[in-house]
Length: 385
Image: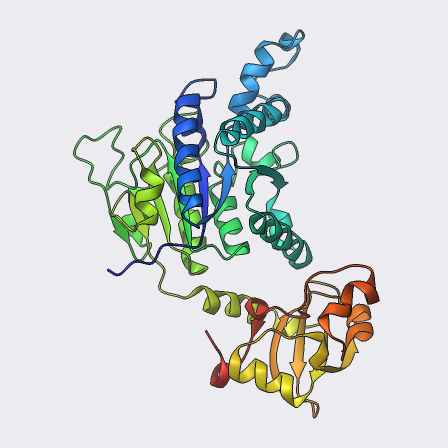
């Protein structure tokens, strides 16, 4: 298969990998993984990290805390306290290890709700884009102190699904889930020595689901079942995903080079296609519309451009940043739908103006486009999927 090096990847680091199965961080493993990340980054790949391990890092901090016996083990409050104690530990460790490669890290704590709300989704996307553009490595974690579901062991596995949502949000080319397992096997390799690695998955069917049964231990909340959920999300978003062991030398570089390692989930839809479908599912709820001149109409339909304020002639209806709006010709014919980067009150002020004038006119700036081309869905005849 021909292979292009990805431009932007999301690497998710599982608890078992970060702790080596113990109650504290395994610095040697983390150091080796960060060395690889610095190497692929130096070759021009943008990297975001989604990390687990705050709870495990907190156990170490708790052991040094005078009133440690006052916390009742096993409660959600206990796990939340561990997460809160562990978060600065984890970031400090990451920052120090990356500093030796002259890489700056940035931390973002996010919850799934942030990625399900369209306006917050745009804000997160812009922030992460800005961090990547200056060469930093964003390190994301589920906001454990607030997100009770993961800690209570429900719904959410060890940040697996979060990493797939993040990959979709930033339009990553590849999602890599690193843990202590070599990949998805036909049966649990801990229980069955004849378990075979499944190298490629193109469709998640019953056989694949049967192969992925719950976690084999209590330390991570990962398990293969939650990794399959992440794979489903990723495949629907048009993003290939690889599950592999973080203990294999050079694993990240090998995966980026397209080498057969771990289990690769291959998507049969393009990213543009999946984004378009997502926007089109919301078109019935569109809040307002903008009409554009002939030049902008042609640029959108024939060249797949973004919609800039200069091409907008009029605004109707009231919409917020992140709402789905309709784009029409001057006579009202629909051109397509998209996510508005600016609310209707702003668009009214900036229509017909050059993008360079936006910060001065508004006092804030969400980018040059009223609708970015990635957030624009056109009907079939002139789609650029």
